[in-house]
Amino acid sequence: MAGADISWMVGLAVPALLYWAVARRNTAHIPERTLHGTPAPVQEPVSRAS
Image 1 (cartoon, rainbow, N blue to C red):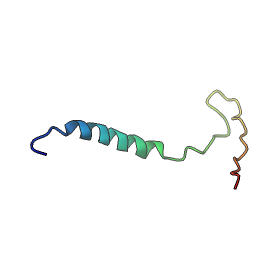
Image 2: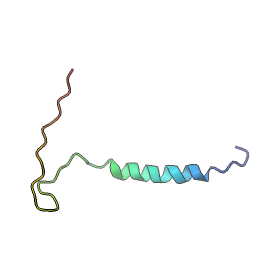
Image 3: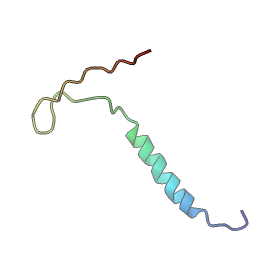
């Protein structure tokens, strides 16, 4: 790359990969109670039409 500065690419890629790794954890889990002590809303499973 003839001395091109690619540090900005590393600066974007590393935080993006870290964010992806943390954000992909089980996000489908809804707790029984919320932080304020109120019950979590009941959500029906989404059915996909074939």
